[in-house]
Length: 526
Image 1 (cartoon, rainbow, N blue to C red):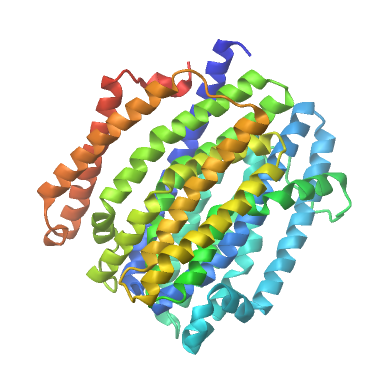
Image 2: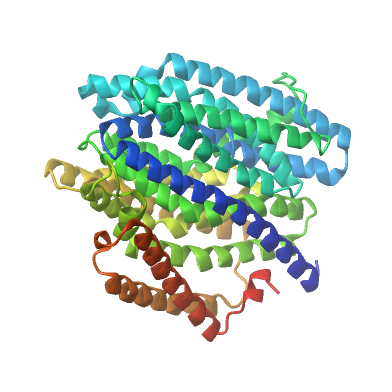
C-alpha cells in the first residue's frame, strides 16, 4: 500500500474511532448518572458489596462469550470470509456460530443459576462469615446470570456490525444498559422487600433491551442469523480452536478483578464497593479510547493480514500505539491527581459519605497507574488476533495472572493483618501493575515473534507526551488548589469547578503538544 493509501486508511480508522468514542461518551455519561444514583440510594457497604460480586461474575464471563474471547476469534474469520466475497459461506458460518454460541451461553447461564451459592463461596470466600450477605449475593447472582446469554448474543450482533464498519449502534447500546438500571432503581426499588435487588433486575432488563436493538440491525445487512446447532461445523470448530487460548488473554483485566474480589471479600465491609466505584471511573477512559481503538483496529488489521499487506498492517499498528499513549498517559495522570475530587463530586451524596470518598480515591489513584497498560493491551491483542495467533497472548495472560496474584498477596496481606485502613488500595495497585506487565509482555512477544518494529519518530512523540503531562499536572494542581475544599461548594458549583479543572489540565496538555510540533493531522498518520 502506498504512503497516501496508508494515510487514507489510518484516516478511516481515526473517523471510525471518533464515532465509536462519541457513542461511548454518551454511554459513559449515562453510566455516571447511574453511579450517582446508585451511590445516593445505597452508598458503599455490605449490600453494594453483594451486588458488586454478583455483577462481576457474569461480567467476567461476558469477556469470554461476548466482546472479549469470542469476538477476537470470530471477527478475523468473518473478515476473511468477507474478503473472499463468498456470501453463501459467510451466511452459513454466521448461522452455525450463532447457534453454537446461543446454546453454550444458555447452558452456562442455567448452571450458574443452579450453582450460585457455590460460585459465591469460590469467588468471595470472606462472605461465608456473614450468612445474610452471602445469601443476598447468591440471590442477586441468580437474577443477573441470564444477562450473560442476552449480552453474548448482543455482542455477536455488534461484532458483525463492526466488521461492516457500522460502529455507532453497537457503541451506543450500553446507554440502554445504564438507563435500564437507573429506571429500576427509581421505579422498582421502592416496591421490593430488599431494594438493592433492583440493581440486579435492572441489569437483566438491560441485556434484553440491548439484544432487541441490535439483533434486527443485522437484517438490514441481510445477515440476521438463523440459529443452527452443529458443533462439528468447520466454522464453529475453527472459532472454538481460536477461542480456547484467548479465554485468559482477552479477559486478563477482568480475571485480575476476580482475584481482587476474592481478596477484598476478606477485608472490611465496603471494600468491594470502593473498588467497584474506582473501577467505574477507570473504565471511562478505557471504554472511551482503549476499547474503541481495539474494536476499530481489529477488523482493519485482519483485512491487512488477509491481503498479505504487511506494510499497511505495521503502519496501522504503529498508529494505534501512538494514539494509545497520547490519550492514556493524560487520562491516568488526571484520574490520579483528581481522585478525591472526582469521588466527592460524582458520588458523595445520600448514603455515600465522606469516608467512602476517601477510600474510593485511594483505590482510584492506585488503579489509574495501569491505564496505559490496559489501553495498550487492547491494541496489542488485536495485533495478534488479526494474525489468528491466540496462543501467544494466552502465555502473556497466564503470566500476568500469576504476577497479579503475587503482587496482591505481597501488598495487601501485610495491610490486612495490620488492620491498616485502605487495605483495598493494595488490590487496586496490584491490578494496575499487572496491567502494565501484561502490555509489556505482549509488546515483547510481538517484537520477538512477528518482528514488529516501531516507525521513526517515537522519541519525539514520547518527549512531547512527557512535557505535555508535566504541564497538565501543574495546571490541575494549581486549579484544584484554588478550589480549596470541594465540600464547601454546592452541587452545581462542584460540577462546574470540576469541569473547569479538567478543562485547564486538558488545555495545558494540548497547548504544550502544539508548542512542541504536534498537529491534529498527525492522528491521521500522514
